[in-house]
Length: 353
Ligand code: MRU
Image 1: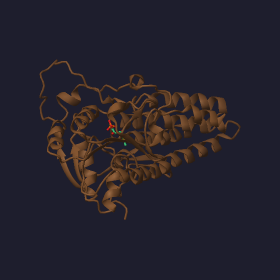
Image 2 (image 1 turned 120 degrees about the vertical axis):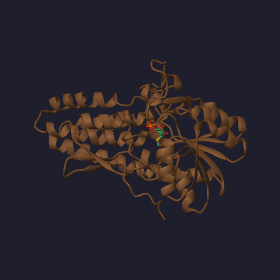
Image 3 (image 1 turned 90 degrees about the vertical axis):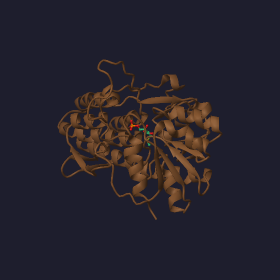
Image 4 (image 1 turned 90 degrees about the horizontal axis):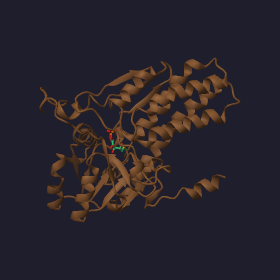
């Protein structure tokens, strides 16, 4: 039985030449789609987190490039490629931490370069097909993360998760929530603790919504309550997603993840990072090479309040992600299995030669 979650996060509407996005800023109050046609609209939807979560951002970017390049059908290859660079550059800047964005842009660029001798209409078709492939592959990867992840978990366990690394952040089962959904299908009766995830509340709004929708036993806690539930023995594993993994295993994920990893170590609780292997960035040696997105102060000082709650002109620091040191991560759950750093890409590169 598949989990009862039948909303699609991102969908290409080919007939109307638009992208349909489930607007995650309206959840859980309203389940509604917005229609995006222009590059500006798509970039705005990514940067304002209407669509968010590393895999979903990658899928959106791939479709955005296809839609963004359609108007250039009559050009020479050189002019088409020049426009591609102009369209992809601002897209790449929309969320700097999630590697899936750059990975998806690169996949589409490689398709264009491989087809340089083809007619532009055929290049566009190849771009569309690649974007659809990225989405379909993501579904399978997410499913496989659940299948591998469940081998580490036992029925009845309490599981703590942070931010939203579920269906809404990816497609179908998600990453960190995939083992939970798999357990739900197998009758494991997990008890999930969802961190609210300040400042944008992806845990309270999105994870709580999708787990409850799927009938998973879910308890919402504030971020600063994690040590209490851990200390009471209510948590047997922490599962989080991630936005980028360096070769040494240092991992960028939603701000607050590192705090949880430190707490998990203190309480002797296994801490698992769940991600498709495309999230491992071969060009990044350690966490120090990962760019951390900083967002606007208003997200902290006024976003969820009728009236601004912090003093005017107070200094604010709002990093959207933090780095968890690889020594705090028990294992990585990927679609290929349970893996451990360091991640060595040199063999794969040599195999390609
Ligand atoms: O800022 P967001 O909401 O895009 O952050 C999302 C996360 O940090 C997720 O944990 C991450 O993208 C993993 S997605 C499966």
